[in-house]
Image 1 (cartoon, rainbow, N blue to C red):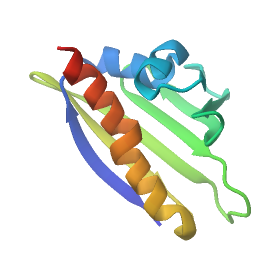
Image 2 (cartoon, helix red, strand yellow; image 1 turned 90 degrees about the vertical axis):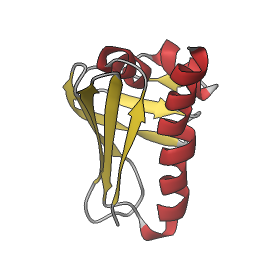
Image 3 (cartoon, rainbow, N blue to C red; image 1 turned 30 degrees about the vertical axis):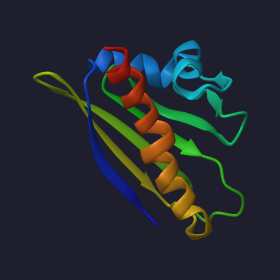
Image 4 (cartoon, one colour; image 1 turned 120 degrees about the vertical axis):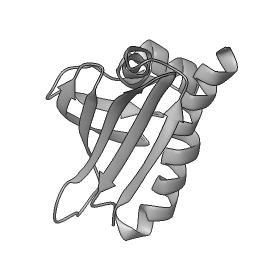
Length: 127
């Protein structure tokens, strides 16, 4: 299954890239320990391992492509986050393919509420 959506956030692509890849910034908006690095090929863990995987492609301030680990998937689950500069902020494009059907609702809600939604609240409530 596939998840795809766009979210406008009042922050620069540079600020959002840091919020996605800097473990200290991730801990600020997620309120949970994070292991993350902005390097291709590195493994990551968010929310105490609730989300874990590997960074497949990292384009600073523009794109992050990750494999998310799930057991027994015939093909990898790939999450792509693209940052598009807007006049007053950034349009965030999220596309997550090969999401397991049994986890689809939780992951869809997680993206919108607890991942991208939390980053949006972090930046827009800080203003």
